[in-house]
Length: 139
Image 1 (cartoon, rainbow, N blue to C red):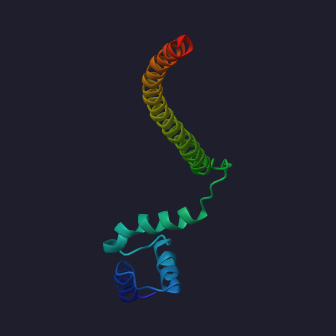
Image 2: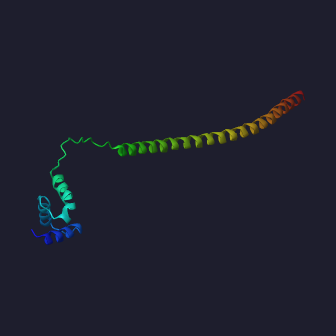
Image 3: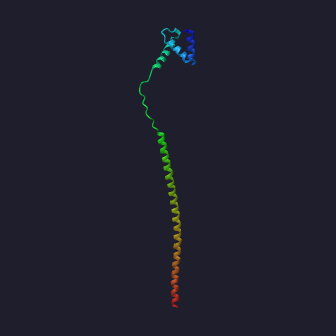
């Protein structure tokens, strides 16, 4: 391998324009014992890359299923909303019924008061009628 060619490939490598074959060529060069002295600094980097390719993660990765809390939160929100609408409506109807009852009660009290006044007058009329009967019966 030509030293000039390796320097050009190294330059292309750092510009990220090399092909896979060119990168393999660089790895082969830097895995040799004899490397140019001015390129010695890159030898650990390429030896690390070649050893890193061989590493494998052998531990078992625990795959726990994710708990889907969003589904349950949305179900709870819908339940609370439905509960609120139902009992809110019921409370509103109860208040309207209570208001109607109070207004009816006031109307009946007014009617009873006026009816009481009318019965007092009828009582006087009854006395007048008995007095009239006494007078006509005596003559």
